[in-house]
Length: 221
View 1 (spheres, rainbow, N blue to C red):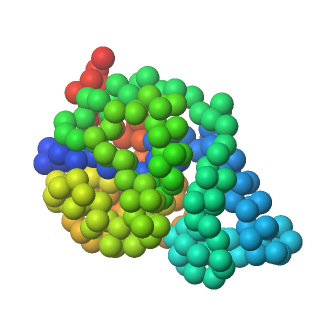
View 2: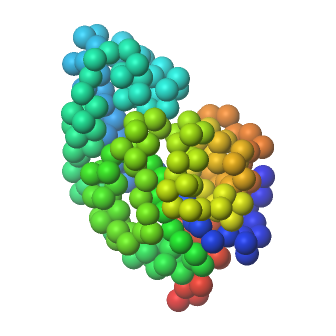
């Protein structure tokens, strides 16, 4: 695993959304998680502590809480997506520097997120990155989330991306594994939260901005 890579061949820059395009310390996902916890209690009829354990198992086994709920309970996916993502974004800070650096990257820019379209649109607008070349959300995945390999192939096909010329940034290590298998360059943002970090990760950085700045044509601005 390296900190700096030769990216002269890259013409597609692909970003996870939450806790990748903005720092986790800004707390958006903590708010979403609280909504997920409340939804789980109502959906499965368990006390909060037991529902949380079940939710974590769904996340590990199915990729998202929603996928686990749909496999085991009768839930309305639209209701779930609407309720858990309807959180205030007051803590999310606009990032003019991130906007500048991303704009200076040579090639097209995309978001690939397990979040809902409504959530992605709100977050990107808040940060200032609402002019990406494409945003691929859970609805575009037919609710089959990362790390399902079929979801990555569908994303690449949708935007006519050559994986050998693409780089993918993620804060969840396992979501980088299928991308690497398809030929994408992979970068882990953050510490991986104690999850397995294997040889499918080409580089890592504490923050996305730290990693991107040297590659941006506007880095010196």
